[in-house]
Image 1 (tube, rainbow, N blue to C red):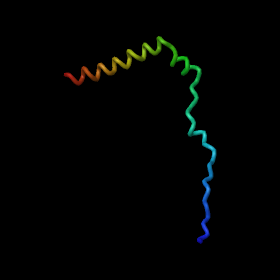
Image 2: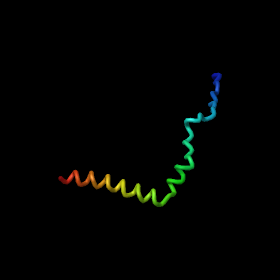
Image 3: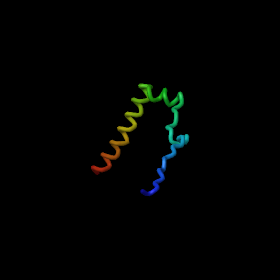
Image 4: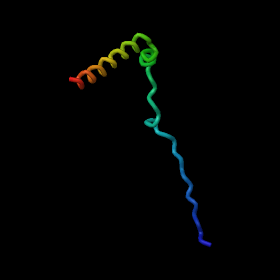
Length: 57
């Protein structure tokens, strides 16, 4: 029988760049703020309508 060396995998700790960034207090507040989300909703809809209307000219 042949002498077989078994290779074992070595697992290293994950680097910090593999973890997602932690949101700040301001980001958390804006994500939950109803009025800011309503504002962003209308801004996004206006952008979409400009594209749609521009395509129909």
